[in-house]
Length: 279
Image (cartoon, rainbow, N blue to C red; front, top):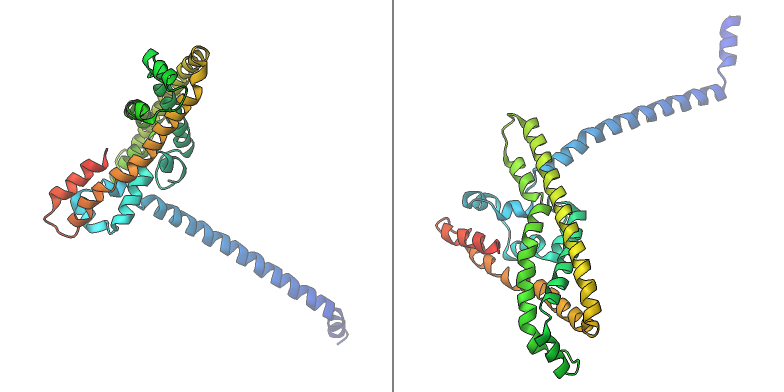
């Protein structure tokens, strides 16, 4: 009886509160652990769904049968996807839905501007200087328009190999679409090697381009001191042209693609749209 009394006396309200607090803390700790484990299970699922999800380039290059099955986009959706993947400025700054490096895309945009600047400078000769002298330094848009158009075309051609070397999107999509599990590690290592080689060549060529541009523009500035404003205006006009043209030409592919997906007998129209979207 004395022992029972002592036990009852020892179990005071404070001790009971402490034990309850300890139990609550323990249950909270267990709940947190379970919550973390659930997160670890959910996050890989989210990552997997993100990887499996088709990107714009992938959908745009679908075969006709796949497009009939999966491409449910409207004309506007398709048009926006082309602008995101083909328009220089939008591709560099606003398109995160691809497998290209964001830093390299921005670098590619600025190198494109440098190419535009130098190509415009290459068209300045004695005849150009004479016309500027006759116009008393005024910017003659009619006389400069052919130069702007030629500069745009030449810059586009010069940018093509750099675009190819900077792009990792097509290679990763090809790897992603190969569902065979045979030699997957070898294919992965091969993909990484190819991407590293492409990026190395991209940075070497772009660095050599920039060295040449710096040298040429420095000489141009020394020889033609009073034509810097004209050159800058020409470059900005060429750049504006490269910004505006895609908004017009990428309206055309959707005119053929979207109707072709409403009728299974219009594969020719679909193939024509794929050819047009590649320009």
